[in-house]
Image 1 (cartoon, one colour):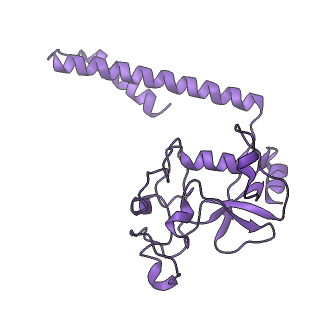
Image 2: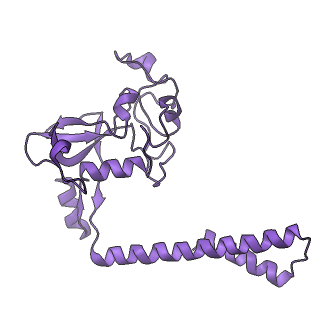
Image 3: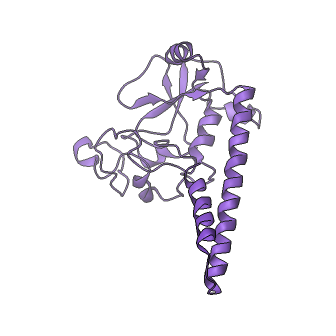
Amino acid sequence: AYTDWLSEVSGLAYRLPSEAEWEYAARGGSDGIYFWGDDPAAGCEFANLYDRSAAPSMQFSWTEAPCDDGYQTLAPVGALKANPFGLYDMHGNVWEWCKDLYDEEYYAKSPAVDPQGSKDGGRRVSRGGSWGSAARRCRSADRFWIFSSGGGKFQGLRVVRSLSSADWERARHQREEQAEREQRRRQAQQEFDEAFNQGDWIEPNEENRLQQVFDDQTNP
């Protein structure tokens, strides 16, 4: 209902992510247990999960993570560090609904590329763990479910926007521009380093040109 309303008022196409899309985003290009690696003790920089800050007051039956993220329950969105894709709170804080309905055996029979998830059943896939979850429940690959009518203080959602062909073209153009800026920045840095290492004097105008390249990269 929320994504339908958001799509209507914005004129753009919003929806819940598929389970496969969610995991791709959560991993951020990594192949570890978590996007930061395999050690749950390192996770409190990135994930609000059941840890030493929550254990004294919550006293859940599962073992807390051996670290402290500073939040007993919910953390403000973006309070911890982002993953390599620049996404916050992919692990912990609140479970996130996906559009797929839960089928325990789905990935044994699904397409290998871009699986769209089961459409049968009354349980909806929920991923990522929450502030009350053990570290194992916050793994990138961990699968869980909640009834479609469910909710509560442990549950949330993250919406995605479907892109049109024009959107994809703009995104491709932006990536190309970013790559060109990075190439110019690297070239300017190399020229500066070579001149500095050789003890050459950099003319004021040349120094200004190099600085402008850095400024263009920093503030595109």
